[in-house]
Length: 195
Image 1 (cartoon, one colour):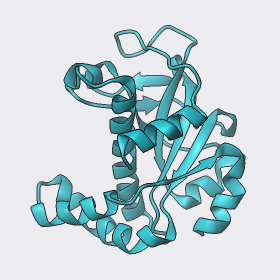
Image 2: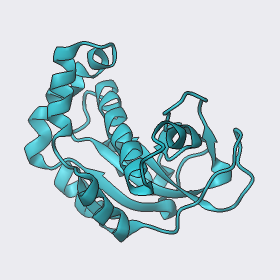
Image 3: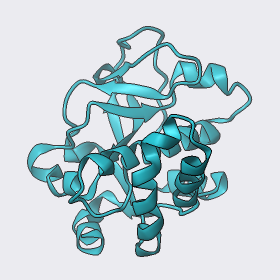
């Protein structure tokens, strides 16, 4: 997905961006856009249980400092892409899940989102509770044409993280596929399409 295409998607599902304060727990009730990696089975449980995820990605202070010349849209694209990469690792942990990356765009109170570390360039955040369905702004998943490449990337994901160039090439092939956008109200349609 190009930055321009991502920007068009953001414009459809965006509420005003929030800024977090320095420190581990921001003291504000503003909403923060967070990108949660997920799987299709996790989406199937969304209404009943919320989205159970302890880690996600967002535009953090560390990301801003690392990518100082990037505008808000570019920073969001980085966080979104990292969530899609983490979805590969979730798929590796669940062999029965359909081989489609899922990213859920959510708007959460800043107090529910913690900085995970202080590593320059990190977009990783910790979530203090399951994400309620009402917080979902949009859903993103691979289309059918990406399944073969995603399946191969799932098998190569850990090796790619360890620096294996061949494995990274395989993961990059999956990342060439843009995730399809669904409105939050289209969850049932997405589940029928992706299952």
